[in-house]
Length: 239
Image (cartoon, rainbow, N blue to C red; front, top):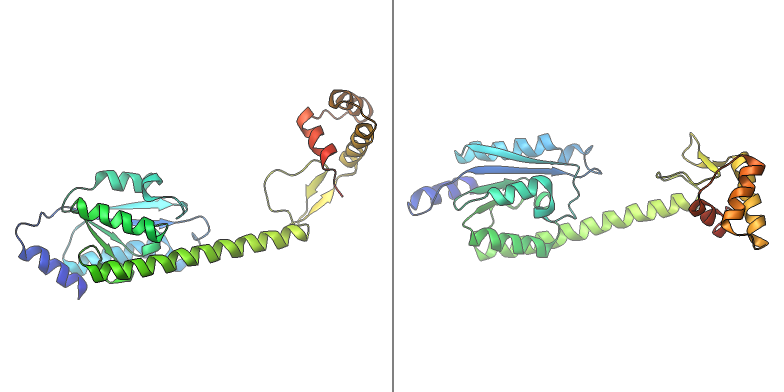
């Protein structure tokens, strides 16, 4: 119904310049496996709207593995989309949070699109949200809820990582000297490297310089560590 109303309105006003209809899809790395927000699902929803509205979809800008925390203009495909828009164009997006990072970001972008004469269709909000005050009010509320949900997700991820770290779980990244990852996702000590750390800490406690420690562990253990690595292991030795 909303699509029919928009199409009728644009056709009824001959002064309205009709441009391209383009779509925009995005998934972040965390959400790529989520079937409800997959790129294919989003693209099908956009194509469905175009079919019902009697519009031809010119292009779909597909953003793969890009966080929604980035402004649209700083995303590779988002930037390409933004700079390509002309008066009369219509942007179709499946969900509000695929396009915007915050309520403020949404309001500013909608206003900028309106000034440029570009229509914005958000399918989860029922259609063209750039045309009237009620739509903008709804947009403000929906964007605020989307922003709050992203904050909750970020907080849950942080809590999980904190819990895993507290239980000695390996969270990825560079493996600290003296350890190796286990099949269970933790870290286990490497005896040979732990011996190097013990020697380094003992010499450091006696006032030896990092260069002297580097030469000593090379001679005693055959291990050549950088001065930065020695500074780390003697400053914060494993417990």
